[in-house]
Amino acid sequence: MPSINIGFRIIVAVLFIIPLISVNLVYAKAKQAINIAYLTQEQNAPPPVSNLDVFIKNKGVIGAELGIDDDNTTGEFTGQHFNLKKIIVPLDGNFVDTFNKELAGKFEYVVINLPSEQVNQLADLPAAKQMLLFDVATSDDALRNGQCRSNVLHLLPSRAMRADALAQYMMKKRWDKWFLVVGPNQEDRLFADAIKRAAKRFGMNIVAEKTWEHTYDSRRTAQSDVAVFTQTDDDYDVLVVADEQGQFGEYLDYRTWIPRPVIGTQGLIATAWHRTHEQWGAVQIQNRFKEKAGRWMEEQDYAAYLAVRAIGEAATRTGSNEIKQVKDYILSDAFALQGYKGNPLSFRSWDGQLRQPVLLAAPRSLVAVAPIEGFLHPKTELDTLGYDQPESQCKWDK
Image (cartoon, rainbow, N blue to C red; front, side):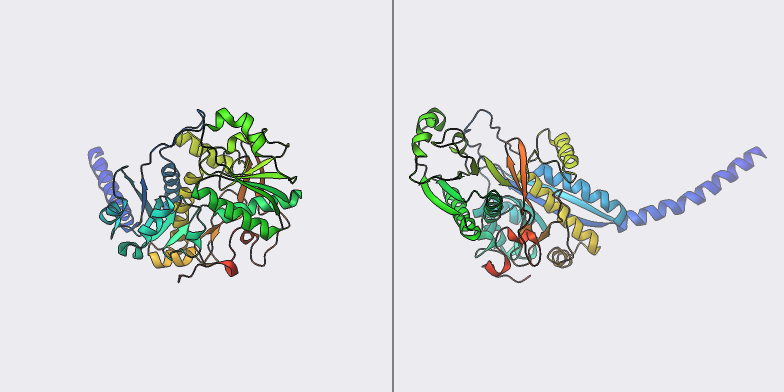
């Protein structure tokens, strides 16, 4: 009798477990897949301006990985699974060939961490017309205006957004007389153009402008040359520097002819993310990233994280992995992405730019967050930063 009872119990248990296994297998097969690619290319390490500067080879990719982790946490409850394929083109490789071979016809969502000149090269490829590209590396205003593409969304603040953020804070402080120093590179001139636009927009006065032309070692000559270089006929409230390569801007602080703060690409900077940011749950994401990467989160890491999270948010809300539904939702008024900066983030439907607060940070402290209180807009104060819809030269169909 005992053996009969044991056998009966085993049979009952098996009959009970089999349906559960079947249900789990059906659920696993039915799980919706959302495939995301991450594309970047190796870069030569630039000559260090300071021994303190460490070249980071993997900017961006760890942010994307963190975003996938968060997407899949939600996906456990929504029956969705997010996959990330990482492609790093060698230094001497051809990124177009890699794109066509590895991504064309296989992925609809591609996070691209590439320089400005390569973004539209990819966007104009026939295969890319059926994709949605997330630019996580550029700040070029041209890519958001006359050179915009309808299949590209931009995650980092544009130069105009950064310059407007600085101008708003300067206006609040009533530091309205600026001395502009511009570096020798094209990127420096583009940032200087954004500064001039912001100055005009917010009533600032650029009382002097000079181009930094010293080609020798800034570290060895800064003490003597900066004081002479920064002499002007007119007094000014702040020195605004446009030095995106970091060739000389760090050596202006405390060496100017008259004692004035430095803002722009050095000193007080406008950035999407900064290691000193701790508000609105930022400490949590900062610690998670540092534990995973062993370093602080950089702007491109943050942008890649947001790109992957934006795809996840749209796929979750729509319950779809179809590109049209996901893109339409991303560009709709209903879309809201939490970015650890107080206000929900969203995309501008006229140029694909992610609207977001901009952090104003000194090297070791967060000074302010723009838009600054008091700057109003009929739709959202975030649109006081950068090109608003009436100003935009971007023309593309959603």
